[in-house]
Length: 380
Ligand code: PMP
Ligand code: GLN
Image (cartoon, rainbow, N blue to C red):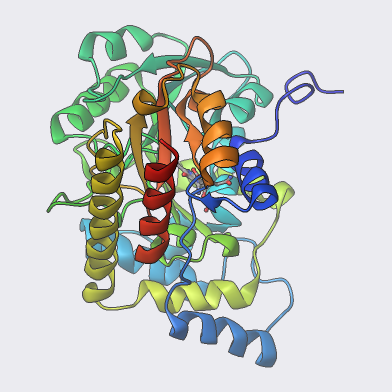
């Protein structure tokens, strides 16, 4: 069997969700909302499923969705995108990431990964024959150290994967940090695989900026979005890639042998979603910011030190009041004994991870957040 996958544990999100189901715990582990996204989007998916078309769509994605992705790039970032040559629809951002890595990374290439990182990146880089080069950032600031980042770049660097807003840190990269990444990519002729699935989930007046709009970067950035996060429909697994034709070409070749295409009714529904007015997007961020505040306050009252969170679905805390220095053990006990599931942050590291941080997901109904805090308070 393949040593990259043999002996690998099941992803922490699946593992913690399974434990939550088994124990009846409130699941603040895996990141998914407990209220489905807009009804008009869901109705559109149902309509197209009934009336068709239901056969293989074009492997690049249906024209309406590719046009909608191009229009969203213009609306939110002022980017000019040719929907026919620069947009690819995928089965979730997970597939988009795999397509981008398989399409761009060759054996011997190095790929810079900012640690902590989303768990799918590293096995796919390795399977492509690449070597991940880690640049660690640390809480509570999660600041990107310029010297450490510069030292990671070298003659073998093919790309950097940048997750902004960043899971699990809840960090939004500053303009200066993005500028530094751009400068190093230009200097070393490297690409950016930009995992921007939380692009519409930034808080406190922060606006997401894409590296694709930085000077000289338009042709170097592979920008990945996800309808799961943008429309609170995580089970749909609709992702989209925007990239210059010379990058999208090999990425589409990988896509044609991974899934080839994506369900047409869901694509049509997401196209409708991307056309929704600005209020939808600002309301989404505002409602999630309020949930962040609600859960953060509750966790702080319970005795946790809560890290600041500028975006995503997640806040991280220390394991402090639990008196346990092993975050995985802390999460198992929280789930079994307190009845609240969370995710250990050490799962987002390649090795030698900090073991005193826990990630809680806040995109839940207020009464669910309140019940979780109440359970934690009672148990502690
Ligand atoms: N990247 C990050 C940072 C994520 O948190 C997730 C999880 N949902 C994904 C990619 C995968 O997105 P999708 O569900 O669209 O495959
Ligand atoms: N991105 C989600 C999270 O971080 C989970 C996605 C998954 O379960 N693979 O919780």
